[in-house]
Image (cartoon, rainbow, N blue to C red; front, side, top):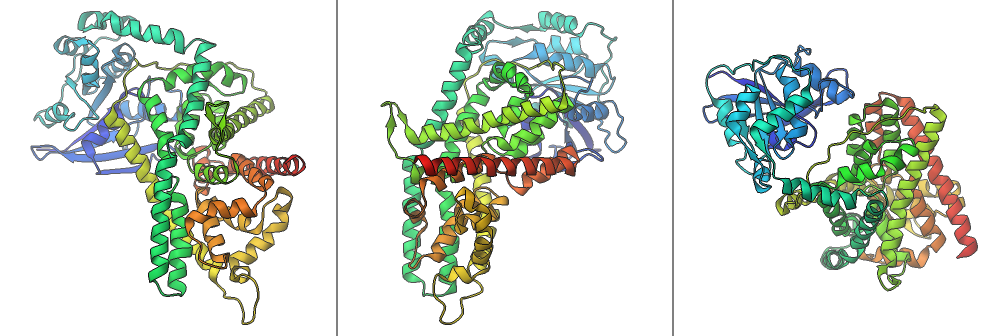
Length: 608
């Protein structure tokens, strides 16, 4: 039996990528389409008959009338305009709970006259909501096969695989051109789909409150505030447990290993550096827990709608909300998600302000400094002061992004209005399994960074902090004579006006590779420079005794604005194809960071 090549196509949020993962598993590769920055995601699987099926996951699109680079790639492949990509079959994935929106694109694809199969994804969710779909009638109306899929469930693509494995050519849907796509969708829905009024009534009732211009914004603000409160309140027991475990491990290693370079590498380098970062894993997971729940519930598009007026006034658009929210995890996927923004100016503005969102890599730095210098006390008998400070730091990043976007708008003299079009999915109860998988994925990413980037940089920093050894008869800590010590002392005059000592200067350098490395770098530097053994868990009380509150606040201000890792700058270069844009982003972020730290440090010295 011959091999088969298919392309998965559909609207954003239809579960297309989840179906791609279900079909291909780990047999995937990601590259870029020739001449553009849009990713090309391919994989394969072998059907029960032995037929190998090549699968291409196309970028999400609402229409063949492309308004963004992602949609242009999808349009060109579906219309056969790319010579090197020519799938034999289009698998159009639709959300079975929201056919009113998704069928419009199906009708557009049908008019191309290419072999096509429609996959009713999330069919289980549609049944739970009482939505009845007459598949045979829908097949007759569309003129192509229709199958059920549940992309997030094991075996949820079995019916699709059976259809793809069938021998013989796939039929091309025959249909006359349709002038009124919306009218045709409404007619097909009347013929083949029955949606209970109760589902729409519940959504409408919730939207009347959650989308209210005043109450909705208050609910959103309270939700965000409680999220950052939970990062501290819930994570403390887990962080303390990890902290204690690392301390016991460090004590055990120090007790049984003989003195020497190997002991110094393990205790002062690896355990002090990596242990100082791993302890913040619970806080990162709690932050992602809230984000995943908001995403799974269908609330995030509504938050984008609520914030559209505010963001338009600042020179962005409500569509920027999702990429910027993604940047709370990491600026890299946030910058890449900006491809879905149609207007070039809005897309560039979103890319440039995405690094101002407080990514999860900053959280270990914030947690270290807040834990060391902000009292763990209640505010008004309801809120934790440390959580309030963390919330303020996140808000500072958001407000600064709005200000920068507004300045860009004024400089560009762009007065055009950019309409927002968003899909508002039905509300749904988040699946515990999906939430757990999402947390497992995020935790895995963090641990892999600890085991690769942070481990490598910690070893490099240990080497730089240990060699060359001090000459015979030298006084003072050995690290003062090392390469790292010399670099730190050389940088200190530049950063002295903002209160940074030479140890902080050293930590800033590896922090350019990954923000959380700054914590492990501080732990390594202070461990090596200490007169006696220093376990990782001692970093917090050490800096609280040696730094002033002005220095701590200055460093917090620095991390609100400073450029993120070098990978972020590389992605900006790839997405904009402009070194000028990279230089602009780097320059204004460093300038804001230094200015903010200078103001905070000098004011804090006078008032605190």
